[in-house]
Every structure is written in C-alpha cells, then in structure tokens.
Length: 155
Figure 1 (tube, rainbow, N blue to C red):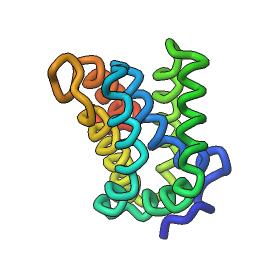
Figure 2 (figure 1 turned 60 degrees about the horizontal axis):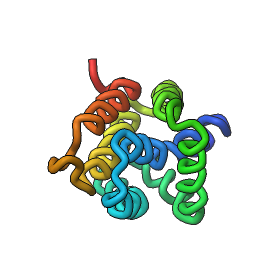
Figure 3 (figure 1 turned 135 degrees about the horizontal axis):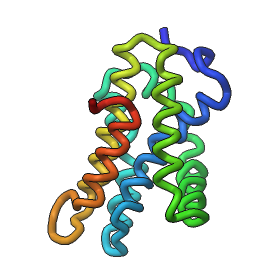
C-alpha cells in the first residue's frame, strides 16, 4: 500500500505541490489575461475529480493533504513564478524529474497512475481557456510535452 511514509519529507512536499506546479507551468507557458480565471479555477477544482477517476491511491493521499492548504499551495506557485518567470518552467521540470525518481519507491502501476493524473490535470488546465482561438496553444503543447518527458512518459 502506498503511504506517505514511503517518501522523504522533501519528496512528499514535491509530490503534494506538483499538481499545482504543473498547472502553473501550463498557465505560464501562454499567459492570457482573459483566460487566467478559468485556468486557475480548473487548477483548483480539477485535481480531486481527476484523482478519483485515476484510481491512484497516491493521488488520493496527495489531494487529502493538499485540499486544506490549497490556497497556500497555489499562492506559493504564483509567487515562485513571479520571482523567476524565465526560470519557473525549468524548476517545475526539475520537480517532475525528482518526483519520477521518488515514484520508484511505489509499485510501477501506482507511479504510472500518479503521472497520468498530473498530465491529465495539466491538459485540463491547458484546455480551460482558448488562446489564439485554439483549445491548446503551441506554447502550452510544448509545456505539456516537456512535463511529460520529465515524468518519463515519452520516450
């Protein structure tokens, strides 16, 4: 069974913050003042529903921990982005790689379910607002591809 105790404190922090980090990375890839509300709303509302649908016990544990501090987790990601707009995506990619390494501590099917959950969330955020008349813009597609690769999902 997947438990929080499978991970170090730093690994767990990464796993809990990562849904909001990948969401912000997609939003930051092609910021749209008109669409920021729907993207942020999706970032806040989609994780529990997608976690439930994913069948991932780990995603369920992450959501149980994240929900009470949701606003703080999102504010933290927004702050990190504002501090270093150019380097933010690079930091999120590094967090994805760290998470992929940490996920070696759980069964492969659970690790895969967690990764698919993260990518489904990132995709849903990308689709939450049209940029340049398309559901997912080219910069968002590039961000999604980078996130997927960092999680070891392409290759």
